[in-house]
Amino acid sequence: MQYIQLNNGVRMPIIGYGVYLVDPSVTERCVMDALSVGYRSLDTAQYYENEAMVGAAVRKSGIPRNEFFITSKLCLSRPSYQRAKENVKGSLQRMRLDYLDLMLIHWPMGNDGEIWAAFEDLVKEGCLRSIGVSNFYPEQFDLLVRNASIIPVVNQIETHVFYQQRPMVAKMAEAGTAVESWGPLAEGLNGIFTNPVLTEVGAAHGKTAAQVALRFLTQQGIIVIPKSVHRERMIQNLDTLDFDLSDEEMEAVRGLDTGHNLEGWPSDALSYNPQDYRR
Ligand code: NAD
Image (tube, rainbow, N blue to C red; front, side, top):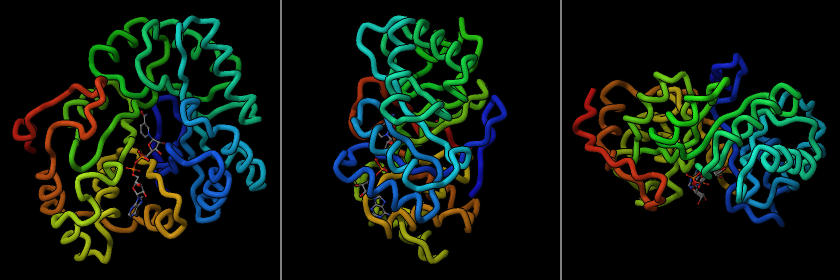
């Protein structure tokens, strides 16, 4: 495994296993499979309603807790400092864990400054090792860090070959915040698994289009958390750090950028012209 050193010195695996839309009834089995093939970083969220099953698999595995990197995400209506603190403690209770390696604000919720102050205090109390954000775009990110004592360690945003997020990647590098890709396989949309460019690059390395799409991100230092409920695909997605794309191959994949997101989430309103971001 390769690691990204976060801005607080903590090391985070560059590949993790995400469990969005993994049905709670199969989450424990899927996470056990993921652990058995070598994943140690797990990405869940309160919103996914499968935190408890992730925690159950972690305990059942018998793997020492300090070998894991476990992320969850807060989702809160009417946010306040107190409610944010209670909410995070709810995640710990559901997962039956003493601490989380990373807690994210799932998306800007309003009153994010109060949530962040609660997160910062939970770091001091030892409940959270690292804290970050998700789906924060320039305005919301700048607003949050203006009064923050701790700079977010990651910003988890939609990032994949079809939406490469070059302005955000540059902005996060400047801020010292790692980019973590959600939907690193474009959620299976846009014909990604049969895309001719990815397939051709893959053929040169004995890899699939999916593996090329993941390597394109990790080669830039972007953390990925692909989701699959199939063991053989979990293995395939992990087996992506033993090859490098050449400069020409990176350039060819850069050409797939559309400059806009696939699903039109309102928080992803950052469209840009990929031509302005040529190397
Ligand atoms: P993804 O890009 O990981 O794609 C998943 C799809 O690709 C699934 O349909 C799966 O069957 C298929 N797939 C996976 N590996 C494959 C392979 N090797 N070959 C062929 N098909 C393959 O999409 P995702 O699950 O939405 O994103 C990954 C993770 O990111 C989520 O599980 C979740 O943890 C996180 N996430 C976060 C947010 C957020 O708002 N922060 C939003 C969405 C997802």
